[in-house]
Length: 284
Image (cartoon, rainbow, N blue to C red; front, side, top):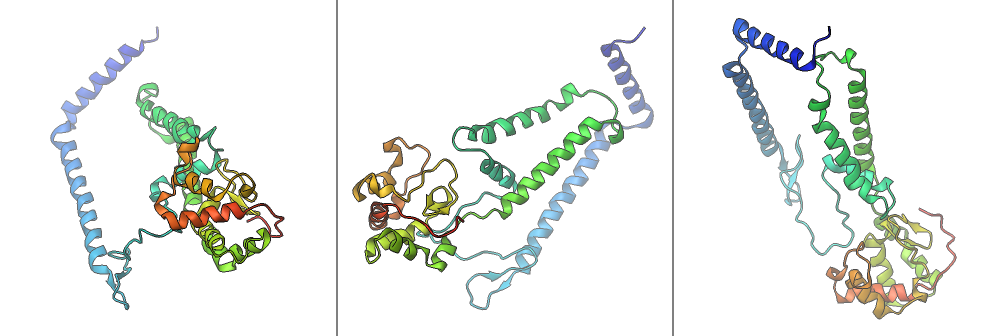
């Protein structure tokens, strides 16, 4: 007659206790000693890397900051709070989640990427000791667990790589190619200094990460094409909208009030002048 799971577990526990008494494999002091030694090794490695990082970096020729050593520079150039072309990115260990968000369409399915998939996987991982109670530890005898582990590592590795190499902004390329000037000529506001300044700011501020303008841009996150937005409202409306999108029912787009009144006025003039046009440029 087959033994019940509870009886079998009691036999295994009794055998384990017997082995501990015979072979001296008690948690204290053996396991605690191993953990303590390993803890000192980890701390020592961290201290060693910190020392190498601190003394490995060299002075830069310009005297502004330090040249990167083996582990990088000691510090970089001061941040510019007024910049409009900086694209924030997450730390490298969040690149997989960062790229996962690019796969799902905003806003209907974004919850799946931010909450659904990570939460389900985390619950499955935390529940592993409760639903997989076999004593077998050899990888060759656990094909399901090994395949799941390999797929998890592979998917996270691919998503991390894709997130690290993803291009986030067209701003610098557009400015270098003089595209805002092309927009001004095509839309008919060439010579309007304020509207042209707004076009340049539009390219620099990362707006094309979401929107499309005359064939340029990502068109992501469900953001509308702004090529003909000037047919709908005037500059004053656009300035108010950019300063506080949530006031107009848009809770997805962030406020651009930090750009200041002058820049907002330039963007408003640019958007008002955008009446539409046929783009000869290829989509980028």
